[in-house]
Length: 240
Image 1 (tube, rainbow, N blue to C red):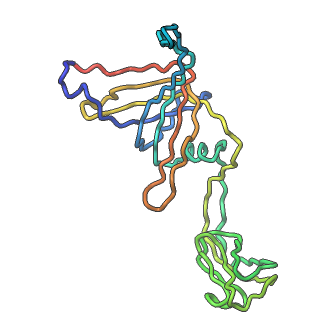
Image 2: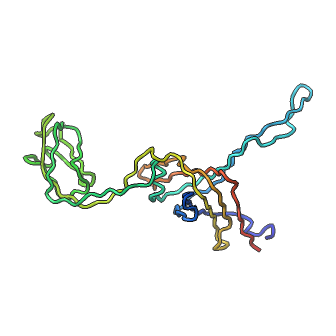
Image 3: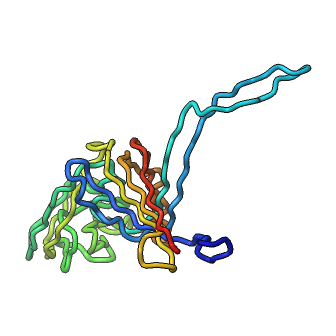
C-alpha cells in the first residue's frame, strides 16, 4: 500500500467476541460496539546521569506493562447483565398468571408504597376502598400507594384481589462472580473491505469500568475494560 492511499487511514468500528475459558471457541457476540480504544500503560525506570548541577535522563526502560482495551457498548444481553451485576449466570424465575388472586397487607400507612405480590396487573382492587381517593397503583410494577388524604389509617390492614399476566425474569445474584477470565477476539472494520482490517486475540480479564448513565435521553452505554494477561496477537489485513 502506498503513502497517500486513503486505505492507510483508519476510520473503523469494532466487533467484540468473548468466550469463557471452559469453552474458548464458543464466543458471545457483544453486539453494537460504540468505541474501541487500546490503552497501554507503561511504567518506565529511568537511568539518570549527573551533569553540572542537574541530572539528565539518558535512558528509559519499561518496568511494568499494562495492556488494556476499552470497549463501549449499548446492547445489554444476558452476559452483559451478569457482568454489570457482578453475578454468575442468571437463573430463570417465572410468575404464573393469576385471576382474581387474593392479596393482603398489614400495617400499611398513608404516604407509603407497597408491593402486592405480582407485576403486570390487568385488574386490581382494594376491598371497601376507592381508587384515586384512598389508593393508587402502578399496574406494571405491582405497587400500591396509600393516599394520605384517604380513609386508610396508619397501621391498617388492607386486602383485595388482582389479575396478573404470566412473566419470565432473569435473576442475577450480585457479588457471586466478581472476577472473570475470557478468550478475546476483537475485530475492527472499515469500508475498504468486508474483512476485518485487524483482528486481535488474547486471553484476558474483563470487568465493567463505567456503568454509564440512565438519564432517559439516550441508551445506556456501559464501558468494558479488557486486561490482556497473554500477549495479544494482532493480524492486520494487507491490502495491495
